[in-house]
Length: 50
Image (cartoon, rainbow, N blue to C red; front, side):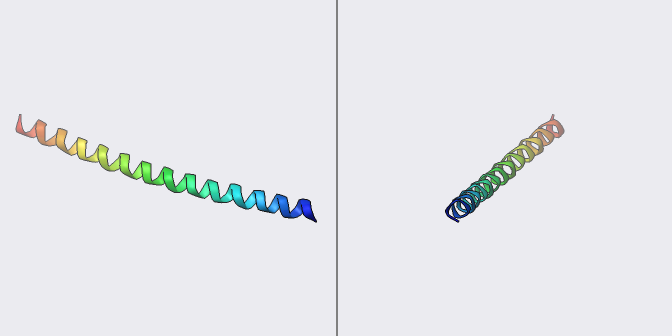
């Protein structure tokens, strides 16, 4: 029974870490997407002004 508890505890810890990594990855991807869109818009404005 002790091994089952250890395995479950380890599984829950890995699950929590994966969720945290996924949350961080989503935040980073969201930030990158916003930055890229802003740069693209600035490039479009510059092209129109030229």
